[in-house]
Length: 305
Length: 305
Image (tube, rainbow over all chains, first blue to last red; front, top):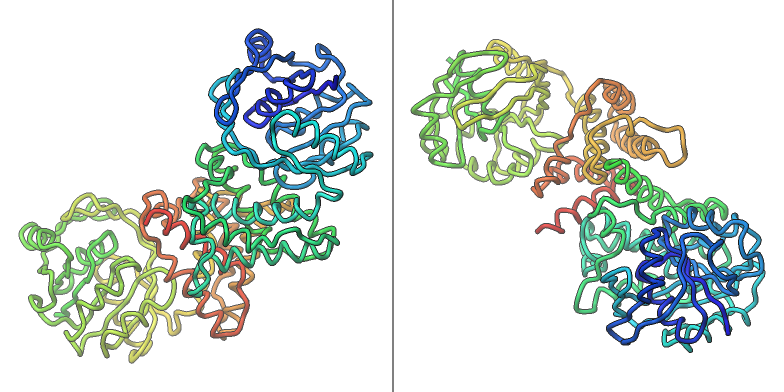
């Protein structure tokens, strides 16, 4: 039987850990000792789209866990360095899979060890009601592609394992076209929402009057598309079309960066806009508008630090 | 004796009206009938740097006031159109002086009548404690220059009148070099503060690291300086030096646009960044960063409308 460790047990980590415990031997790496204790004693309950309680191991250090074949690094982008540092020196034969927003999460983790790496992006969502109870809300897929030291077959194996557990997953020979589409979309929609206070609503697609917000959204996406093209990435979906389509749905999505700003939490700007700006520099493409959004979000973070 | 009408009796209007009542026959144009009544009955008390009560006339329509030689339009930039509309058709021989932030206030007012116009910008400040009581805090000057139909001598006469009342004033043959310096400064500092939540503090002058906020501040000011140059304006003060100097003072200034955003009030963006963007279009100078700030502040206003 496969052994999987889920590192970081928030909403996404809880959904992975509980579901996978039905088809694999699952351990979880938590930050708090109390969290590990209740998971070991009570298991992890899933409600919503599924209804069951999974049994799993849990600890605050890898030293107390069995060596897994697959590690799903499921923390927020802002905790990536600290969780990778805790894994440093452990489990050299394991494959680590990152599922954070943006791009470059696998590279961050890869700095802490020679593990084989898979890169993924997840669209599923849930609500965490307690340390031992997560509600499964949106059953959208996790997309997985090969990264350092792995092949498309490794991505397919991981996707097959996740699918067998009751979650949705899809493997790609190259994740970059999908990941970059989402990156450009997020670098734009998340920052514009966080700075204006608007949820992702029809303002984002309005381009009739000269001052309409959609013009800024489109200009930001055009900058992002130029970076993708110069980096040799053919986008899977056009970010502007994703934007127009999303704003035509009934209810306006409340982007996570706007939630972070409301709560005066550190945002994922470094993994999203930061990654795009770094890629732009590497490709020699000017991105003055994304640099502006980056500086403003950093300034916002500084205002409550 | 000179007759002066002060249109708009907030902090700035109250300071002008009370002081000028000591050397001129002053009337005030208020929005609320109750405000006019208490001003007529109790006069207008000044505390702080001066201590006296001025006597003046007050009404909610020009029809109920004596015809003045000088009208000081002292409302906020966002109320300019509505106050100019109320003056429309009255007092064709009067000179109207605007004192709003940004540029173009005189042009807005000029659309409502053929009055002679003076353009001014004021740096004095106070606190309004009641309809009949204003505290005079900062005794910095009002700068006055000629506009439509007026000469430097007219600006000097207005400055002399204001000086004789106990306020500080200075006349310029051409106000544009000073006004544009302040415009570029405000278009940058006000919007960056309003979007980040930071008061005007040392973050605005930091340019060491690539992500430092001062780089955005400088880039915005460089765009503004290019517009000034292309418009034939030689700046009186360098906005970046004004910025560095201001952030080196002990206490951080809390810009008015940040106050507006905190209170979810409509901002003066149209008279400040809006005016700069319009001038840039006229001069054929690209200002993508100021257009970004404009769209974001407009989006912020839309978020609470």
